[in-house]
Image (tube, rainbow, N blue to C red; front, side, top):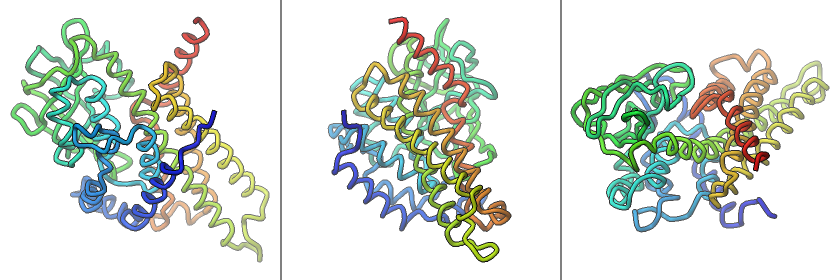
Length: 371
């Protein structure tokens, strides 16, 4: 079985890389990092909209390109390489995927064209504070028409126009859609380690909301959304890890100490080798996840957890070792190493920390073995 991307998909990735190399340098990332009033890079976001990437996996009848999950994986890896400071993941991996999974045709026809055109910026409101986001412990409540409670932190919640919210309804949980600019919604930006991806606290005080899917199906919808989003996030992590290895390798070749490149030292060789091995393990698992996502295979929960864990480990390790390879310079503000370390730490906990995904992987394997 060939798990590699097709020539057309590779071409898409190459063109996306050329675009992002020109339009999303680390200088663009630093613009958002250095300005407390910037939640994202609006100029880059507009150009991403014009490229049509927001509608890559959205069906043509709903205003998208109708390409599919594999093309979205390709774009996700390139967005990860560029550390793109835009709400792409929130709108596409979580919000649009959630609507396509759980929404009826009327709702999809109403909202998805806005996502594809950039008029709708979506986010996914799951977390209610520290700890795992267990649907059985939700405090945000939906009574059939109104929503009450607080979600924090919500990635891109301060700039989103709409949110999918997992809320308690009766004895179960439901997925609901909320217009964040309507009455009964208040928001404030919260600070994180990674300011180039904004986060917010959202308070719902009787906000009008529409149920997405059936009442009580929220927990199942949440699992499905997180499985799909985790594969795409893993590709972003893979992209970031690949750049860290490239940065460290280039520096090891050009930095001289005692008359020779530091890359000639065994300790540096071992660092680079370990980074390479972890990246290749992550890539293998990401390709497994991409296959399961694109075919809607029954192995998706297992593949999603495996890709998520491998990519989280690879990006964190590569970002850390990249700093170490750069030595004292790697710890300075002027060198770009910290940009990747920040993003690695953020992505490792988005959609669930590694411990959560380890439990998911063990559960998926137990079910598979039991069958």
